[in-house]
Length: 420
Image (cartoon, rainbow, N blue to C red; front, side, top):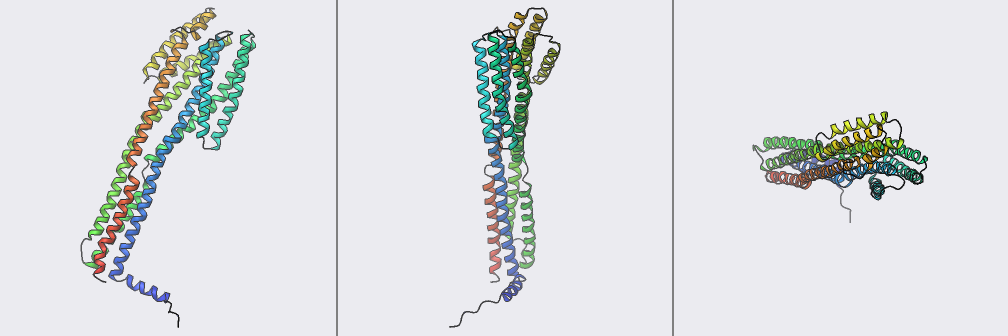
């Protein structure tokens, strides 16, 4: 039995070329081209919009918690330094609440450091976090040496504390600030990825629409019919997909803009104010520990108070009111110190009275911390709202483009049957 003849490839190609020049061939090419273009565009649009939703999840689950932990790390380190100085001024045996405040600050710093370590994604940040961890151990050792010597009345305790504070101010805090700045940049990049216009998707949709229009004109010339309902429906589906994408993207961008103004920008502003307040508090206590000329340090404290006043001009009100009282208490402490009444100056600075600098600083710190928490909630709510606008976009766009492909095929099939 002879084997079946294999088709001649060149003859097949020639037949396809002849068929492609016929009206049914042209209609078939239009139908297939439009359908394939619609499906591919739908897949691309769905993937790009899905990337926006994934970006929202990264902001809420990774970038924002990392930034919050980095801010907490800086604040806890500053609080530990201020508490250590306050404890030293308290005398040989510091008050239990002062000691507890220092230990709590260290615990908060350790917790924030663990959170930052877990959220670290790049080598540079990991190196900075490792340096902070190593320096924190050295810092606590210096503080304990200062505390032990202070309890025995040895003057060298002040030198240990100044060295510890120098390590904090020159090593730990700059490293923490670097991590915090980088984490905020990550949040802002995530916000940009959510609100950015999906240019590729829109360009592809426009090209598909152009292809449908061209295909409609060719089909009209070949079949002597002005409109093909299938291609009209396909064009409508593509237009609807474009409007949907533009609409939800603009709505999401509006929520992201609010998350920046009322969230990220405000969060950064308040965090910087909190950091500055901790620095002023540390400087305020260190100048009494030094027991020397306070002219230079007082200029630094006054400059810090001025900057804080400007930063808190728009609230929160509790922190602004606490700052005003804190300044008044500090002025009283300086007057006592310059008048030779060192115990009174110390009492006004670290004493437990409601009129002391310690009490007013706590009011400033609490007000800023609470406002930061509210600002964080606002930012997360707005980012979540932006993601909600985009939630059904990947599926909806893909469905619309599949329907457009189906409409093109269904609409051109009756015209093909006329020639088959």
